[in-house]
Amino acid sequence: MVRAEHVISWMKALRQVFRANKEYLTQLDAAIGDADHGINLDRGFNAVWDELEKTRPGEISSILKAAAMTLIKTVGGASGPLYGTFFLRASSACADKTELGAAALVAIWAAGLEGVRQRGKAALNDKTMVDALTPAVTAMQQALENGGDLGAILAQGAAAAEAGMQNTIPLQARKGRASYLGPRSIGHQDPGATSSYLLIQTAANVWGKERSA
Ligand code: ADP
Ligand code: MG
Image 1: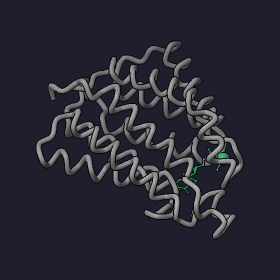
Image 2: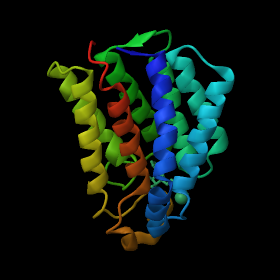
Image 3: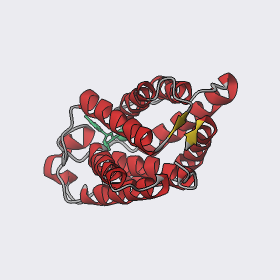
Image 4: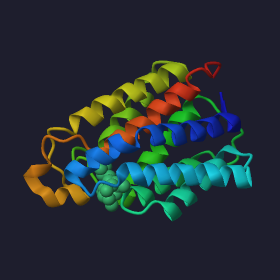
């Protein structure tokens, strides 16, 4: 089961992961965007952690909501509102729940993805974060149906997100700043798909141990 303390651990780990990957994500964005994706997420998840330390929300949904509002407030560019929407929808999907079992966990990722799709209007293969999140959610739903535990579900979601991230390389961008480059966006890995992979990979690392669901 994933409880509030585990969601807090995820947020803390995300701050570290986006700090460690700040240069990498920024370099990916330098190739097909404006070289700020790593800077944006490092700033955003630092601010999320500061907010959590200050307000100490005790419920899963209020932690996710605090993350959402902070990302929307502090991250400029496309990814702030998109990840903000992801966490806001995830928060709504687990309102009043004190712990998340496998099904509830998959449901919050599916809700988050749906929010990103509605907000950004990107389809699969538009070379965006949707290309990592969509296969991740599909793989998690499949793993759930197959009776997998939390660890297996998250590991399969992370593996599918990684493959989806790599699949963005040959694609031409059709949404966001990279789409301005037209065919010149081909041959580069999408920064947002990469950060989405890190989001779920980190959840798999932090929550994968909570296998009792
Ligand atoms: P900006 O492009 O405004 O500088 P970031 O660099 O932080 O913002 O984020 C860029 C990432 O946002 C892209 O790599 C892409 O994955 C994602 N993105 C951009 N537009 C959309 C969209 N409409 N839907 C989903 N994701 C998008
Ligand atoms: Mg950018």
